Image 1 (cartoon, rainbow, N blue to C red):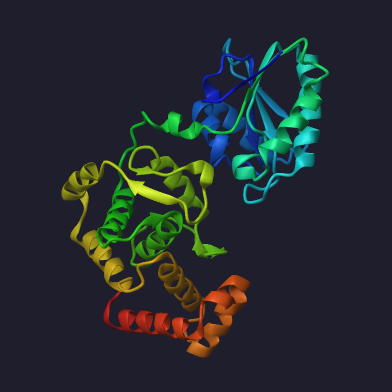
Image 2: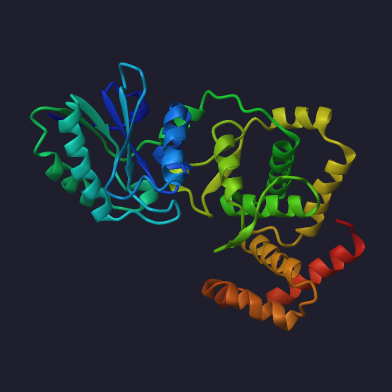
Length: 343
């Protein structure tokens, strides 16, 4: 029997819950993040399996919960790397493996999310017929609950959580508030770049920035943003893109924390970020400034003409949109600021 529903798959009473994952051990967003928070032991087993190369496309990693419901968590790879998109053949081979496991384990009920959709990028109208076709062999013996798109699982998981503030978290949230007060909208790209400059001015955020498509990018920061989501931040993790809008929540708690815990040095760092980015307060402006700064850290003697070349080499997109004059203005701002202000 096949049933259709929407809602939080974590709350399903099915014997087995299907969790969509990648094969590199990251449960950073989407349905996988909800499972990570709800079933931490499953995440540990999954992460170790990925580290040892034991989980591949077309294979399933099944863990037991020692509960009546759910009894099994079925980790179902729909993509290889978390940055990549899902593919229809990944879903197809995984479904064949799922049907086999349902038979072998005599599973009586299973809940299945929209495999490969959402962050995976596949269209539900194409994935759904594939799932139904593969389930034909067992649908008379098993209750299948298909969760169709339209629900943000992780918001439910996070809505009641209490997130502890630290100086680093409070400073990031305060820097974002300072940005917002000026009348600008916050998005995920803005958060990446604000955090980048906070760390540049000496705040130990423990972030490793690398060359990303939209400038310096720290993957670890995305985990922090996801952790804050639902309490101090709000955004749709199912639409996790650089331009995804972000709103601040409970900032009065951050202000109270700041009054008690932030040092004068940390307050000065917040002011420095604000002064440096003045006039560059847009996603494009922050990306430009951070990109040029990132290059200068590695090539401190680079002249403007060399910077223009390096920016163009970063990505084709940057070469098209970051005009030589813009690079020159960013270089001038950074040079003048660092000449008169210590890091």
